[in-house]
Image (cartoon, rainbow, N blue to C red; front, side):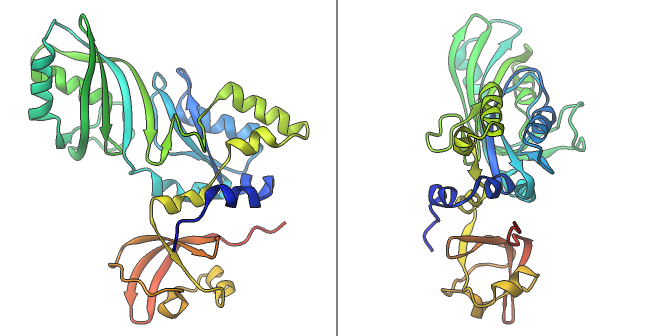
Length: 297
């Protein structure tokens, strides 16, 4: 099936439906934690629940997608996506760019082993992460502007610290901005990033009866289909599927061949049904991990 037109899905929904199952791409400022920003959105819109896709330190700015209400169930499906950062690293002694680039090529390209920092929320044990690119853009004295595209869960502050240790001179991060998190970008024209000031303005307008600004920044959570294989099912058994029935091969609009454990997004026409995992067990094709029951007005 062709990927659904997210803009058409958005246009077809009421603002109530969008608030129930959407994502907002917030431009996080310096200061608040990611939880603080998520909680701010939660309270401003009087939602049941919000969650963010990937923590940013208080001093780090940039792309912080916030899931609203039922779209919070999709958080885990986005967290492992690649992230891109731009930042400034300060080296503790003067060093040539060429020497740093050689150290990056030898030690911080491809699969690396990284120990999470002491203040992280994850268990402190070595784990593998992939560095897709790590480029030095500009040098001013001991400060170097860099960009890095990495696997989700990579600690950039630790990356800079480890680079300084490899060079034997020490280094730390001065500034950092996330410009991309998976399918969310700071320069996306269709689904633009929004700062907290403009978000507050959109909410204020909405509460005064004008939903235009708020509608513009809401990203339908059906956009998850951009990340995962999209499978279309027939409408025949939708009611049973909504109550937990697995998807059988006979439910498929078109036969597909996918390996076991593959995660898929399932649609019936343009209607999002849920996230499933392929099981290929006899007549059963896939079992549900999150089923999007219809919103009751």
